[in-house]
Amino acid sequence: MSMRLFLLWLLLIPGLGMRGRYHIWQYLMKHPDTPLPLPLAEILQLGGVKRPQWDKIRTSLNDESTWQQCLHTPFVTLADAAYPTLLRQIDLPPVVLFFQGDLTLANTYTIGIVGSRQPSLYGTQILRDWIPGIAQAGLTTVSGLAAGVDGMVHAQTLLHHGKTIAVIGNGLQRIYPSSHQQLQPQVGQHGLILSEYLPMDGPQRWHFPERNRIIAGLSRQVLIIEARERSGSLITGMLALDANREVLAVPGRINDENSAGCNALIVAGAQPVTSVADVLTNYLNSYWLL
Image (cartoon, rainbow, N blue to C red; front, side):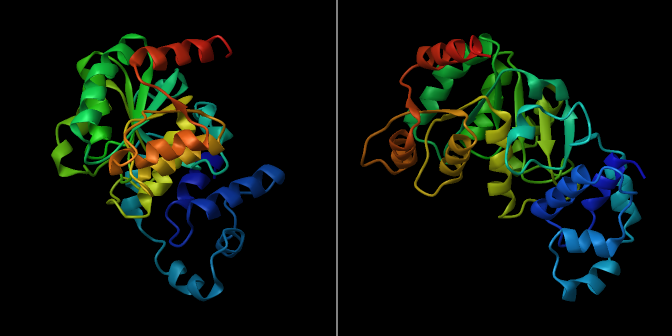
């Protein structure tokens, strides 16, 4: 079995999460002559799966239909040269990414843009004013295709003939939220959709924090439009700071819940931006340092 097929097969093993799969990848990098596939017991041990779960896992592996779905969905692995360069640099890169669209966009100059699922008029207007300039400057926007700011980022980027990447918290064959029945296929056709989940997986609560690390990792810069305390957008900003990405945040009133996360990020080291010119100046300065 090839390395890339083995890494894909790991997705079918219940209880083997993103950390377990990455630990197995690290082991294989340290032991490159290891024959594949590894025995299941060794996989479960390396992946940190508790022994009482092993028998249950053994009886649930023969899912041929899911395996065929995976094989017929475009994917890229850490073993492939086409894997996004920036994403390799984070602490816990996804071992496998399914994709729809133009994978080369992941290696362009990317700016993550995230914000509230319930943006204020303030946040909405900023997006409508800033996205045209960002798209026309040739930056590829990255967001999570969630309701609110994320969906607006993708829609506005496409409207202004820019390129956009959506990192989703469900499988590629599922559309979430349902309000994006038209938007998600448009992003797949004109941009790029990425997912580390099996093609038919629905969204789960824990998928979204996992998804946020990919948004941060794919982006050279991350712009936070609006974020509440303990929100996913705040988490994305903090992950970007931890990954040594440049984080930009739109400041807001100190008594505005939707701006609490942005203001906290600025205190933590994010750069405040008050116009699209600030964003593009930052991009130009960063570009010449590449």
